[in-house]
Image 1 (cartoon, rainbow, N blue to C red):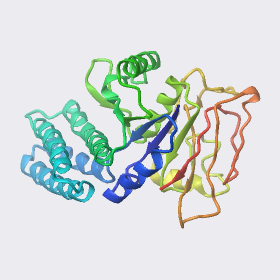
Image 2 (cartoon, rainbow, N blue to C red; image 1 turned 90 degrees about the vertical axis):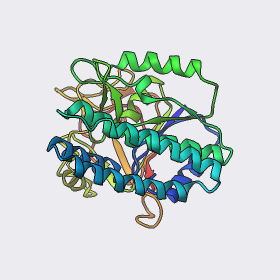
Image 3 (cartoon, helix red, strand yellow; image 1 turned 120 degrees about the vertical axis):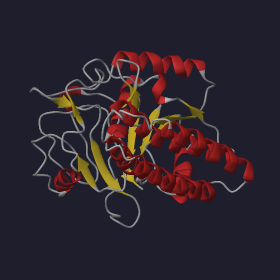
Image 4 (cartoon, rainbow, N blue to C red; image 1 turned 135 degrees about the vertical axis):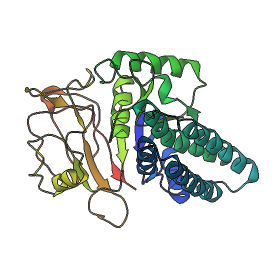
Length: 325
């Protein structure tokens, strides 16, 4: 089993979604993790900001604009009327859920429900597109297995157990779809893994399933890493990307899944996976990406293809191939 994660830009247009569909059906069994369509989360955050300020007219205006944009997206993605109808039904259900959060005393609980709709929309529309082309897939709803504990960290035992239950209770498939970013918290409420959460979702799934490989597809060239030993001194300049994007620290957690090899000491250990990202196509044809395989972790050895970079003392043995689109 491999895990493939596609970010918002990768599914940011109907054409991009079609390209992702071509990429994932290569005969290998996989879990495909999708982010929300590019720009969606930011627009939902803006909508929530209106509600925090008590300005429902502002929120409604933003909701209507986003709904209109998604109607155009569905028309561009799905050509046959029967599939368009299904796509519009998805939109109606998710946007109704958003509208239901317009309540007095708007709080973080309602905001997180609103933000979750981005990934729910993208995965459902993508599955409808796959169905329209005859490509088989099975949905693994993230809210059925992804959960954080009372400390706000992923409940790894729960995730592994629930994923196995879901896989055992669904028809066998060569392609499983799921949402990145979203989860339940310890109270059973809809929550999220914060910015960069879709990458983290992919690594958690990979750890839970003992994945052979994780692929992070992106349009950003370079390594994303929160290790302070790497940020600011990456030879390819990728550390500057990390700093500008505000993602320093996002990909580091105190306790990565136990099947990953940690070859160093210190107070922080590597996240389930670290991104070594290279673009696909014309941006940098000389950078083929990195292939990392879950194998012998003796000594925490790393092999790199593409940009060489210092790895410091920490290493884990979940490796991924990650050219972007």
